[in-house]
Image 1 (cartoon, rainbow, N blue to C red):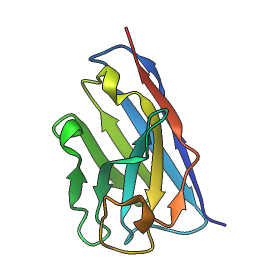
Image 2: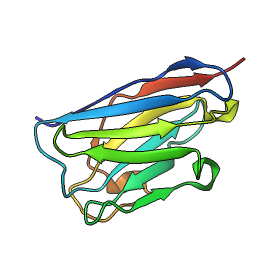
Image 3: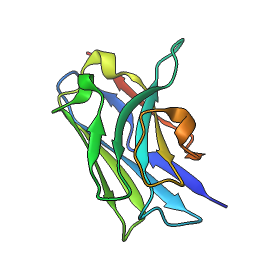
Image 4: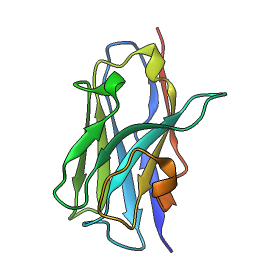
Length: 124
């Protein structure tokens, strides 16, 4: 059974950093696209970042470009999201997602596996 388990969320102040982790089990995702999405209360799930399963190319939504970095450690079967210079508008539940496909996507429908989420709250 495939499981994705996120960790690393919390309550931080504007300007702080967090590193989210997503530990995968049940199968390896070395050649799979993986991504991070977030969802704020009353809003739809939105794309944050993705990494290609082909060549580890990375993709970001404009609002996090240059602040967030997605990466993976294949030996640990773990996906990361380094979040710097956090802003109140980054507050949301953050979800890890994995695809059976190699190509990265910004669309939630293109991902086959999801974690339960980790809450990130940025507030002074």
